[in-house]
Each structure stands twice: as structure tokens, then as C-alpha cells.
Length: 168
Image (cartoon, rainbow, N blue to C red; front, side):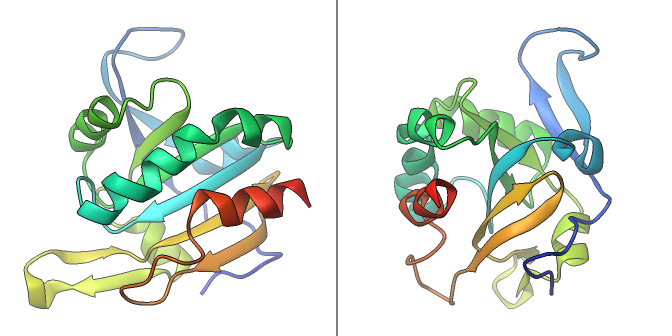
């Protein structure tokens, strides 16, 4: 399992873009984790899946609500990573009104989750391999803090915990 001081694994996530922009077409666009984290401080939180009750009611809204506080604490970007495809993450972003505050990144094949060692096997429930619920502060591609949630818990992966760590 990834730990504090480790470099994030080299992986490509997908982000759904609503508008065409510099180097981005409408639809899914690749995000190279190594390049996207270089020289930045990222508040990253991962969830088992989009549109799940706790994640939609507590996790994502907390990070959206605290966007300005994260920026004031020196965080460049907030990422939400989930084992879904980019279209689902785009729909979830619209539903949660994340706008430009939280990047909703798809880990469709769970490659990032597997590379971090932070997986949750929900095959018995028909949902396959998912990401564990966690949050981390990433500085220049390295894990500065890591908060892994226990099964069925909502204690350390929330925005308040990670914000306190970002503030130092």
C-alpha cells in the first residue's frame, strides 16, 4: 500500500470535459498523474463509486464547500478519483455542481487504485474491484499525508480532516 513519502504511481486517469479547450476535446481526456501533479499541491480524495449515498451527500459537497479554504491553505487543485468511466464522472460532476472546484477523475479499470494498493473488492456485491475511501495531500507528486477510511466509516477521508492537514 502507498504510504507517506511515496511518489504517486504513474497512471493515466480520464476527465470528462464539457467544453473544448487548449489541448482538450469535448468528452473524455487523459490526465497523466505524474505530469498533472508536478510542482503542485493536490488535495486528492478517492471514493468507491459515483452517486453513492455517503459520497454524494458528504464527501463531494464538503470538498466543494471548502474550495476557497483549500486554496488559502496552498492547495492548487482538488481531485476526486473513483472507479467509474469518464462519462459517469462527468455526470456526477454536473449533479454535484463541482464546476472548476473539484476535478472528477475516472479510474475506469482501477489501475490507479491497484497501483496504490488502496482497493476495495466488492465483487461479492456485484460491483467489482473499487477504490477504497481515502484522502491524501500530494505535494509535487509525493504523498504528504494519507487518511485511509475503515470499512463503513466516514471519519478521516472528509474535507475537514484533509483541510486541517493542508493548513499544517
